[in-house]
Length: 235
Image 1 (cartoon, rainbow, N blue to C red):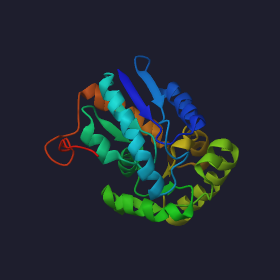
Image 2 (cartoon, rainbow, N blue to C red):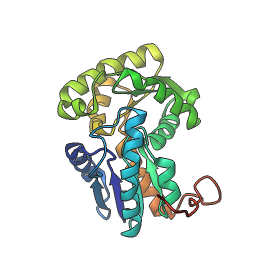
Image 3 (cartoon, rainbow, N blue to C red):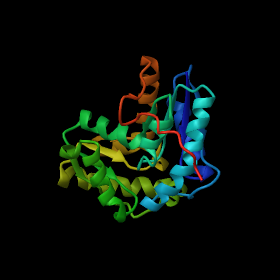
Image 4 (cartoon, rainbow, N blue to C red):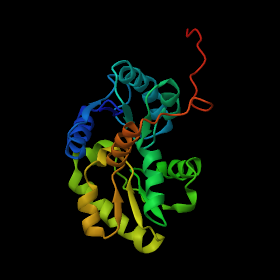
């Protein structure tokens, strides 16, 4: 089995971090590739960043299809360009946000999403509605740390998450905590042990779901929403 993981931002250290953590959990027979586009934003923290990143990220979606991969994981919690990726892909594309929101709804009555910046809270709220899981949503505590800060200073990020997640459990009724950034890959076990609630690392969750989808031979339906885009001249 071959899984292609795309970090949609252009920061190599984040890509390397994701690769290291997935190497630990992947099946022995799974061939793992983790890449990022050569052009685009260094981090994704706004709708503008998402739009810029999506264009270049789609080239890697095509590459994974052309090179015979079995599934793609889109490793950014906002799932930028996910619908477009599903449209152009013959193999399944798993967005880490979409996958983890549904997993959180399975594992607990309410979930909270740790998010980097306060300005992204409305996006988290909107995406729970979009994915049909808003009834399980408790809150989105903001770390007030950028993606690159979280990647560069994991100890500070873990301490901040533990502080805010503890409040979400006690005050908001959260039973599941989602680490809402691919740059937080690998942090869930330490935080879960200290917190006493379920903590989900979206990149790991989505990767394992991608392995399972590939095992089952499942693909996105091309009957409607994810049908191939009409062929046309691009000027």
